[in-house]
Image 1: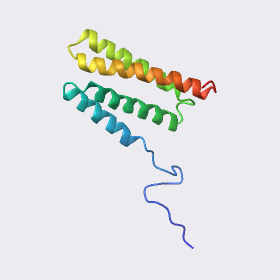
Image 2: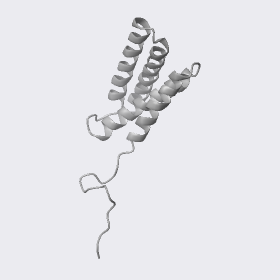
Image 3: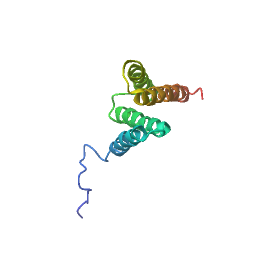
Image 4: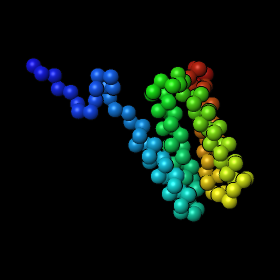
Length: 120
């Protein structure tokens, strides 16, 4: 009997990655939150989705053995970029959104550290 396989998948990659769709949705939602004035929490939510997707891609591809280290790095990067945008440019809404996202992702990385080390 002939074994049926799914099109587009090979023996090397037995399943498709789920991360591209949340990554794109995070970008779109964050831009919608910035574009329409007054819905900054939507922008932060979109950027959190984007950051989580980047961390998931790094973990799935094998570049990271834990979740908390890339989450902390992405959060620190977002916080630094947000602070720079807020102070050095007139894009204060983008700076606030990136800075707020950085704080949320760094807090999540602390929770991930506690969870992965069995302290939570």
